[in-house]
Image 1 (cartoon, rainbow, N blue to C red):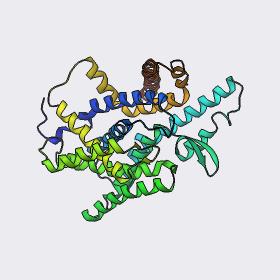
Image 2 (image 1 turned 60 degrees about the vertical axis):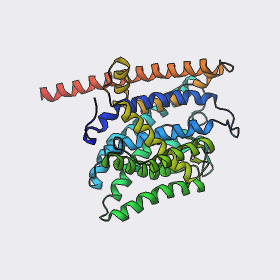
Image 3 (image 1 turned 180 degrees about the vertical axis):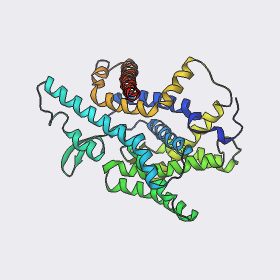
Image 4 (image 1 turned 60 degrees about the horizontal axis):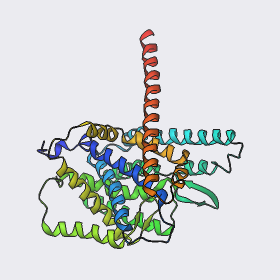
Length: 358
């Protein structure tokens, strides 16, 4: 079924894309358990990192498709319910689980989980561990995306309150450049601030793509050469890790993620020119529709479950280890998802009964 206009390209249009993206993220995080030691560079590594960066850029751009300017107060009210409350809830559950495990295993919570208190309190992105004012910390992991989206929406909405289009554009470009500059100063920032600044650019790009219907209209050859060429250069010579604030080629890598994200969305639009049905498609669309819930559950299991032990059982057969970790993650996320919404449903039904009785 061909889309006749960009009006059909709301957030629902991208459920399949977000669902497939979430599956690829789970697979990628399972593959990360077999990454070579830091400092070793596989000649093909850049291709994977720019694709990974492109997938995350595409996620932000999709959010930009559903962007509407609101008053700062209204925007904050909506975003805190969508992103801030889930972050606080899951962070609390992670800490309670860590504390419970410490009690069961008769070990100190401060030494085995205590570093997460400061991490979650300040939303720190210390990928692989690090220090914040000399205090050991961990990373908020995949939660960086939630915090960046929350901050990015607020900043972008604030920029759009300005009356001059030129000033708006300068602020958007300035946010992206400042994001990179901050990563040169430090790799660890409260509330993933550099990522929130970068998210402003991705959100603006998504809104721009929707406004000009760039997923369907013809694009001149010179623009295709620039977009594909930038992606290829970043893939061959670059190395991208958004959460670790790693940009081997500097702003060229940053630009490469914009280009890769656009190419991913363009290919998706081409794929969606025909009606897509089937059980697998339906499952992926459901995952995409509930992508924020899946991200939150993934953030929990990624920290709590010792998947590295599964990988350690198959040091010479990485694909077996990756497959088992990926399958295990899918099962855990599915069970937690079903259990959470079952309990939530029962609570909501009891509340309705009380309201009816009164």
